[in-house]
Structures are given as C-alpha cells and as structure tokens.
Length: 317
Image (cartoon, rainbow, N blue to C red):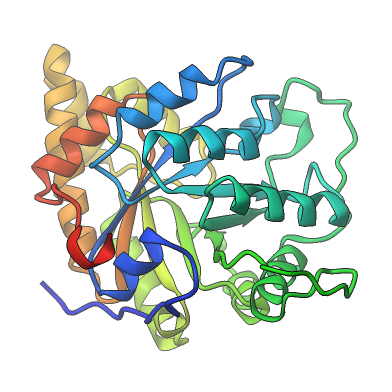
C-alpha cells in the first residue's frame, strides 16, 4: 500500500476524527439523515447501529432541499449515542447570523467537525417555491468558521469566549465533467482542512484526479475522504450513474450486479470492498466516507470485510 500524506491536526482542533487523521490512520466516516419526525429516538437508534464502525458521522442538513429534523438537533442525539457528529451546514437556508448561531450551538451539543455546503437547489425539494437565503457563499462560511476557530471572532467582528474548534470540511466532486479545480482552491484558501468527495467508483478517473490534486499540493493542505455508497442492487447502481451529478459507475460493476440476480447484495458488498481497497492505494487519500442510505448493516459489513474494524482506540480516547 502506498504511503499517505497525513496533514497533522492541531491538537486543540476537532476531536476523534482529527486525532485519527493526525495519527495517519485511514479514517472511516458515515452519514446519518435526521428523519421527517420530531422523534429523536430514530436518530439515536441509527447512530447506535454505527457505533464502533466509524470515526464520525455526518449529520445531514435538509438533504435534497427537503425538510427534516434540524442537523443541530441531530448532532445532539448522535453525540449522545456515542459517535462524534460532523455538522453539515448549508448557506442555502441561513443568513450569517444563523450560521454563527448554529456553529456555536452544534459545538456545545457535541459536534467536532463541520461540513460547509451550498445545499441542493430548492427546485428539487418539497418546497420548490421557497426562497433560498444564500446571504453568503460556502467559501464565506469556511472563512467565518476558520476565523471563529482561530481568532475567536465572529463574522460581525465580535470577540467571543470559548470559540468552537471545528475541523472544517468542504465538498468536492472530483469526477465532474467538466472539472474546475478553482472552486476547491478557493475553499482551501478560505481555511478548509478536510475534503469530502462525491461518491467515486471509477478508480481510474479518481486516480487521475488525485494526480492533479497532488501536483497542486491539495493533499498537503487538507485531508481527503473519498465518498463511497455500498452497492446493493443494479437499480441503485444505474440510478447513481444516470442521476447523480459527478458519479460514474463503471459498466463492469453494473453488469456484475445485473448478472448476480437475487445474489446482488452479496456481490455488491464484494464489489464495494474491492473499490475501497483500490481507494486505499491512492497516495494522499486519508479515508473513506461511507453513505449507507439508511442501511447501517451494509456499512458495518463493508468496514469489517475491508479490514477496517475495529476502529483505532488507545491514545485517541
């Protein structure tokens, strides 16, 4: 396996995920979607099903522009269940006042990482006529979170006591066509130190992106977690290939799932583990972000079969 660049995390920044990355261990993160209900038990049960298999869980923020329990509330339930939350924070739904408030509140409730996002467009959600806020850009959110962390100063220029010490993440779509590296560079310049990529199955294309990113010094500036959704059905694979921007599912994978018939879940697991193994050989990649789409058993199975269980403990606490 190739050596990975592992940007050292400042000890006071973040929590468990920052420590795993700082130690040079291959990180595993997951995703929890707060429900369309006011019942926090649903989030707690979801998180408990992933305890021990991942280092942190992204708590989504009104995904597909559809109303769910707030991500800040979700972070509290995830932390209570024993997993470090990563707050997803979109500028679509917030002005700068609300962004600062949620950054403060989520840290107080246990979030130790933040993923700054633009958010899916309103037209794809359940309130297509709703107004997007977009008071600031995602790059502005990154810059504000970094200034809050490093200087204890809000976007309004006010000093605060005990500022949150988030590990600051951004999203990247490495297989976008066409691909423009400028947007990622802007986020890194603003202060991001963690990158979550879109789902990637096409290892040849992902390796080519990584070669370009390495030449630009991306891996020295930030830790990179590659997105991966465990494969279960040929229908799901085709949907991702045809409908998700920046996602390519190789024909060989789709053909194998189709040929598997009723055995598709087992074949999908094997294929996912194979892709994950190839991701681990890409120099500079620091981990994988597993999006189970609610199938926690599949996430656990991938982590186990890939030899990534148990997760690091000891000095990480």
